[in-house]
Length: 406
Image 1 (cartoon, helix red, strand yellow):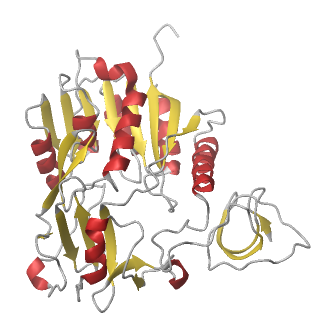
Image 2: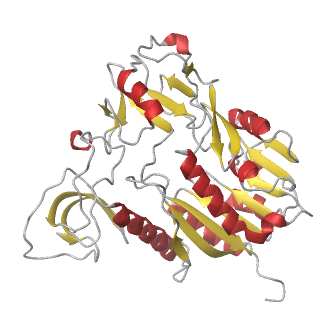
Image 3: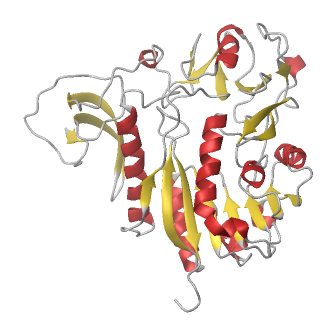
């Protein structure tokens, strides 16, 4: 038995609760089935809670008890989830980047009544929509979803896509526009890597229950408003989970960039720029932007969204891009992070400030070490939570080059 906070064995504890393979909450005494054991860490899952935390909750969604892996942290209070995510980021920077004293703060919370306007869903054998079972490829079909925007709830309930494997549902909360697209092979959903798969034709699936007015297929798009700016997002382009989450990210990127956003002698580089979220919403309109993105669909959206701006959209993987001089770089890479090649290219811009939006704390820590070797040092990180009730984390980090006389 393991104390979830101290990670030390506990003897003679009383068994009081048995969850359904949920994660531990800090401060609990739990019984764990270890699945992976390395020299300095181990992985496992909780099979029994011996002494529950006061932060443990009964998950409000009925699908959790059926094994749905969509929102795996519903068993903890929102405040506890925030603390857990903060600790995860601090621990990654301490262990991997050797930044024991790194400044890591918790950002503002999203509104409590916040729904996701983009859903990535799996398709069950009978065509019903659902989510993967935790630690499995099996699909748990759902007839409702507590985090789905009301504009998507009807589709979650009624749509049937027999023969499909995965589906993307998206709406524009401000415009009321909706789309749905699907694939017949796993892994063809949109992502942040810029390496799209081969989605199926809408005609290859006999879809049922799609409401009238919903755009169908991977060429479909919706318009969403973020920080007062309309943004087009196609089905295969990555977009944030909701406009509120996008607003929060934009605000934190602006804070992290600070005065570097006002420099007009050199352009701002928006690397892994997607549909242009930061180029449009964070960078002042009179500042030149170079937007670098590998996905053709996202680049098409970005050209539309950046129309009328001093902007150049470069369709290229960042690692293969020929860097230009820049005072500020904003980078929002995929889960694997910048990596050695990405760090080398972005540092070749000569930027004094680099703002990185990370969705994986360990890749952030690896990138922090690589950037330090190139002279850009970790200044501060802000942890935000666009995906409540899940272990997914977004971190906005400022790296800066010390003054020459420092």
